[in-house]
Image 1 (cartoon, rainbow, N blue to C red):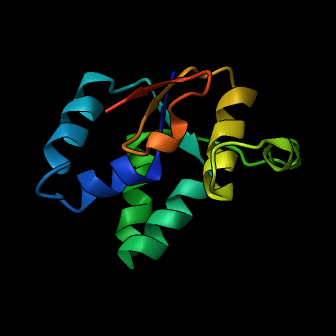
Image 2 (image 1 turned 135 degrees about the vertical axis):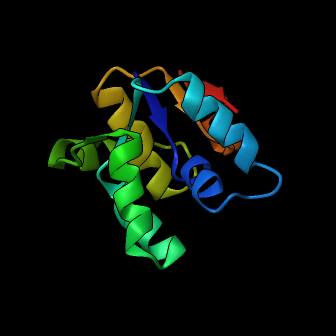
Length: 116
């Protein structure tokens, strides 16, 4: 299973001129293996201001639950810097996921492989 960060999904769905093609290629390469947090559809709705963006996330990746255990773990982590990223990282740890598609360098230096 490969975790997908919000930024990669945003680049793909908005056809970002610089990063959109790379995100699309990675999603095509890993289709059927992608997963993300239940937080991600909501974040995409907020960022894109479009409910279809949230729906697209549901079709792109398996949605992993955001549980009290994950929040507790995220609160204990010192990295990544942003709490939102700590929630993603805690979700990965809870599910044993070791790879993330992300353009966020805050995941570098952790015990996961960042692909982008």
